[in-house]
Image (spheres, rainbow, N blue to C red):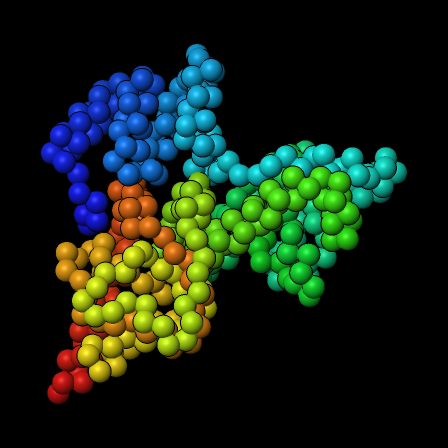
Length: 346
């Protein structure tokens, strides 16, 4: 892989710290030292995971030092693989409703009951008063977990868009109470709590990005917390029609997941194929030491999710399944292009 070169001293230091962590798995000091060194060398995701180990060890014996790790590495250190730490506490919004309205609009779900399914009409937003919900999506025939939501979380924000349908299925994982809110009522409540509205807007964008990643066969194999960490560090962009995304002999600036649009591939003036929605650009730099001679040109306007190479490399070192899918996708792409070019030369 190697898009980031480490010095011999840095490699040696990381190796020794990894060995110390393996020898002393319950010692938060070594995990903290390794997290610090990983962050210093640009491995942010791996640093967070080591800091998380230290956080959970310190939470019982030294809460002050545990919270210091949150300050340094962010709230992701509080997450678990199935429960990413996402979500402001929106409980204050319930104060916008009188006691009568609260009683009339509170609904209760028994464990394993479904709140709504993917494809249902999106009519209301829900505030979790107590309990827990699992949000999942049917991805290529497999049910992929998107998130676990707890007390104080808002869900169903798609109802704010006219004519929208649910893009996920939500099931109660324990007995749960929710406050049902109409889109207009939510807008009025946010007027009284503008800071919560700003947080809600950020979280809505993040959840949409996580959903986009989950629909990709490559990224769907990552645990829920890793998809959230990736989504927080990714960004959305647009390539206009005709834009040269990658010139011949050059590397791309990052990995790009195509959400909408079509990219055509050329070697010199020879057309070599196309990549459409769900396709990934930029894997060549991760897997090869040489820049591809192909040109990537946006045939139509392309909406994309951009990701830094270092983040992808970190995830490959963390997840063997993810590494295999990246390698398979890169090998499949190269083989298809080579075969296409050989057939055109005959």
